[in-house]
Image (tube, rainbow, N blue to C red; front, side, top):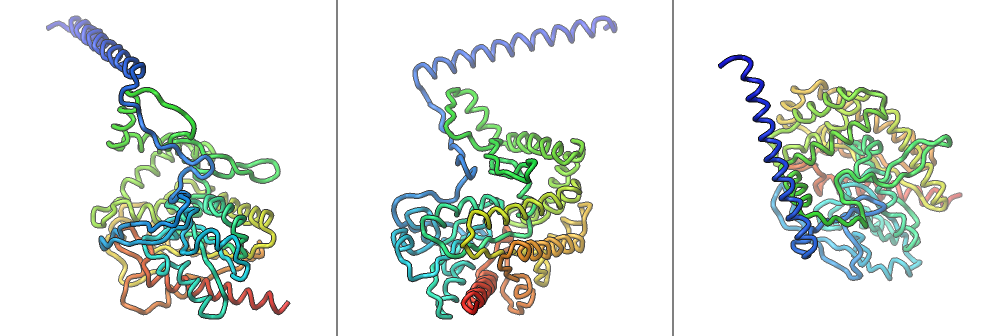
Length: 423
């Protein structure tokens, strides 16, 4: 076969491929139009929440017992949500009308929305400890997986107003919440202005925009396939990181290197392979690849505390940093964590130092904003019991850790109340 024949065969192949692609696209378009006109197989999308991006519990108008599965043990757990979707055993009417109790709102991420009975979570323990100490407290909480501190605050603003709350405990998980202040994916976020920051609505990367109607059945199938295979997640992450890299004045190759390190941070040795990344390594890798982002995240946390102070001047604001599994350093450390870190450009010791610095930065921001600071790290590191403080499936708090944190939070609130009474 002569060399001159090869280009012509390749051209014929491309023309044939183009014809078949055109026929396929035309056929799918015709089928799609027919199904739309006959209203066959309408697509079902779950829209995002217009303010929060997503929610963990919605108002139902009735008290509910919610079922969850504790992934590390497989145990089925039930906990209460009231008519407004808030985690508490008290009805909304009681919280609105009873003026004899100290009402405490708690906001946070999945380390607040734990799969545990309300009484076994840190906010439940805080309520029990305060009552035991003579403070008639009612604690109600709302958390959701992946929430940033900004989302956590926005989520409890309405119940704070409706229930006339006296205290807000803002749980800030030091493993990833600082980084979450910079994330744009399907969540409200801060954007810079000449005067500081303003809250911008969610940018819809993965959730469906609320109110938008999709009619194409073919596009619904393609989106579903992309979601099931993980291709959509890759495309969404690339799009999101492109925007973040631009905002941080970094080249897109920095984003690709970061994504490659995230890929290497998965471990098949634990129940949820991405747990180390989700709970602590993602934040460390992000700050490593985008060095200016750490300070920007802290500036946004400062802006958040200032905003809460402006909007809730009569509220006792309590900043409670929830340390990660890595920061607590309960011994022995799971060997899987060391094996993952050896594949990354960061070390175990660097990760601890970074998170300790973030923890101390939160202490400083609390003092700067006139907020009450809860030291959860000291009591957790002092724990000498044999039970685990974090599970080994996805590294969320277990009841022994929640008990320690709840007691620390109750003591901080009680001490602040005594100080206020003496003034």
